[in-house]
Amino acid sequence: MHVIIYPNTYKDPDGAITGKIRSCLEARGISYGVYPQDPISDGDFVIAIGGDGTMLQAAREVRSLNAPIIGVNKGALGYLTEVEPDCIEEAIDRIAAGQYYLENRMMLSGRIRFANGEVMEDTALNDVVISRCGSLKIQLLRISVNGRFLHEFHADGVILTTPTGSTGYNLSAGGPLLEPTAQLITLTPICPHNLNRNSIVFSAEDEIEVEVLPSKDGGEQVMEASFDGSAVVKIKTGDRITITKSAGVTELMTLRQTSFLDILQEKL
Image (cartoon, rainbow, N blue to C red):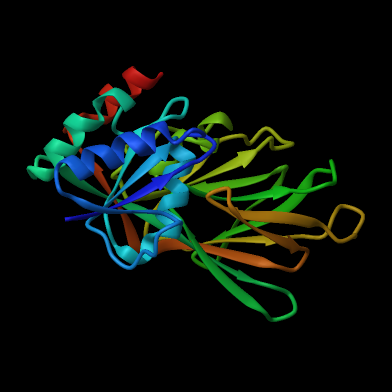
């Protein structure tokens, strides 16, 4: 067994939690590497130290390993993190004994087609957020689903989220909570400037396109598209981003079969 330790140095500034995990692994004869100091080429699972943001970052940066991720909670709510710092030894023993469960979480694929013909793609476990940058003006966005026009939003932006991401920005913006292993895509407007403030829940098989329109006076709008809050791309009038279910998944490791309702009760 080989373990990848993925610490958030802001959450574990003195390295105390990282050191505790290293000591536990060494005492049990389990090999490990610490990202990004050590060269990483393979691993049986990843231990992320931090909060939900750290879990999302780990999912992005070590995705090539195709290894399940388990989190040690040093964040606030920690919907994705599984282990509290004082339970690290017990968690490692249970994992070594094979006493764990795996959950596949759907991801989103975003394909941006710029007006100049360029194309870029990225993925997200939590959400893809299209939001204003700089200007305080209301933004105009055209939404199409499976090639058919749905709605034009006058808003600060829109959030497209997976069920895993429903407890993040989507929740703060008034969107619904979704069972995290479901196969759905939710669109939630950010501060819409009309009476239609409701989120829309789509099938995971739907294709959702967001087009940046000209401003009300015909001028160019400049916005940002962010993937899990880290990869940020500037987009402007004429650019389009297509959101679909990703072919890849993120595998999370859990030590208990706890219902989503129990987790909500605990965290909220």
